[in-house]
Length: 128
Image (cartoon, rainbow, N blue to C red; front, side, top):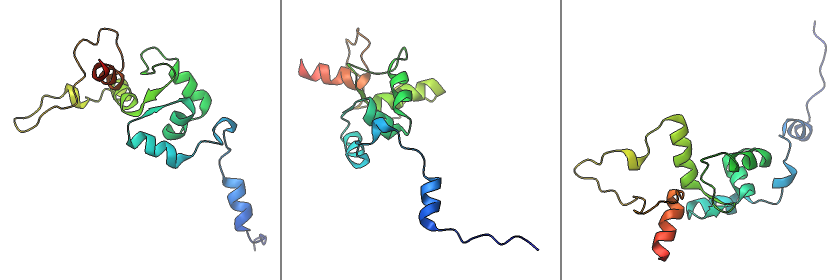
C-alpha cells in the first residue's frame, strides 16, 4: 500500500522545472540572434551567450581568454567555431588539403600580421 500522491498540475511542473533565467539575457531574442549567425554578423557578449547556451558571465569570461577571437567586444560565430575546434583538436576546413575536385574559397587573406580572427581579417582585407 502506497501513499496517494496528489495529481501534478502541469502549470506547476513547468514552473518548477524551468531553468532560471539569466537577468542579463532577458531582452535577447533567440530568433534575432540565429538570424545574425546565419548572416555571419558579429555578436556581442549577450547575443553570443544566448547562441552558445551559456550564462552571460561565462561568455564575458570567454571574451577575456587569451586567443579567443573577440574583436572590439564582438565575435563572429564562424571564428568562435574555428577557435573551439582548435581547442578540441578538430581540423578546420582550411587545414585540410583539398581533394582534386574541391576548391578553397574560404582562405584567410594574406597579410594577417596582426592576428585578427579569420572573419575580421577578411572584412578588413575587403575594405582596403
